[in-house]
Amino acid sequence: MSVDRLSNMLSALNNAKMAGNSFIETYYSKECEGVAKVLKENGFLDEVKVFKEKGANHKRMKLVLTP
Image 1 (cartoon, rainbow, N blue to C red):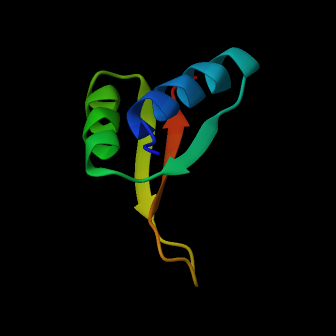
Image 2 (cartoon, rainbow, N blue to C red; image 1 turned 90 degrees about the vertical axis):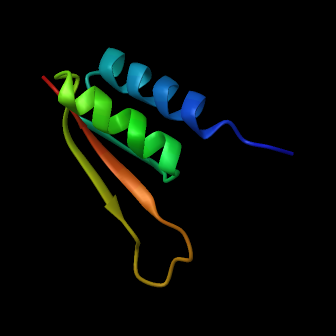
């Protein structure tokens, strides 16, 4: 079974914006990071942060939405 992380990230951003949330955390992929950086350059996001939680074996991204 495959997961479309890019579609999941974009849906999460849309849902967060409609719900009035200021950020989301999502699974990391190079493709998602690239799209998130383009969204930041065009003013849709304020911050793109890639991190790895202690004890975790995968990276995550925190995306802060522009108010």
